[in-house]
Length: 143
Image 1 (cartoon, rainbow, N blue to C red):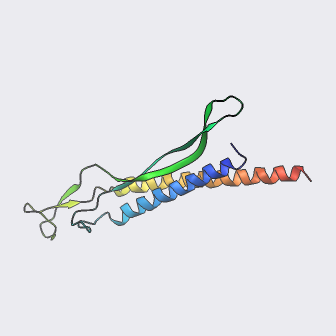
Image 2 (image 1 turned 180 degrees about the vertical axis):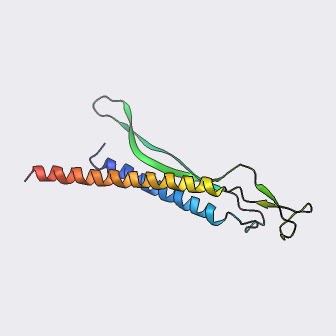
Image 3 (image 1 turned 90 degrees about the vertical axis):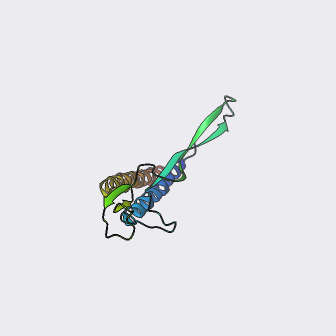
């Protein structure tokens, strides 16, 4: 691992949390969307991540080791939880029984996820600032 690996790892965390916040914002914006482009209700989206690891050969031991590179976005998938059904016979999207299929977005869960994502973003910013401070102190040693 190089001297700047901590910055790269934190930067990947910042990008991941930004995608997560964008996804949550989209969910909140579409909490009442009963008919999208495909004619169906909006389905909640979830950002999916995985660790970003690179295998590298250690010249001293001759064995492969994991180089941690942070996190990477794998994609955005639909939430498989069922849609909410609300009785509203006056709604043009109501079925023959008067029920409207509403998005499976729970605003309280989205807000809790947004707070968690914000805290993770702040933690990555703090890690970057700490790394910058350590690099600065290391440069002061040579004076």
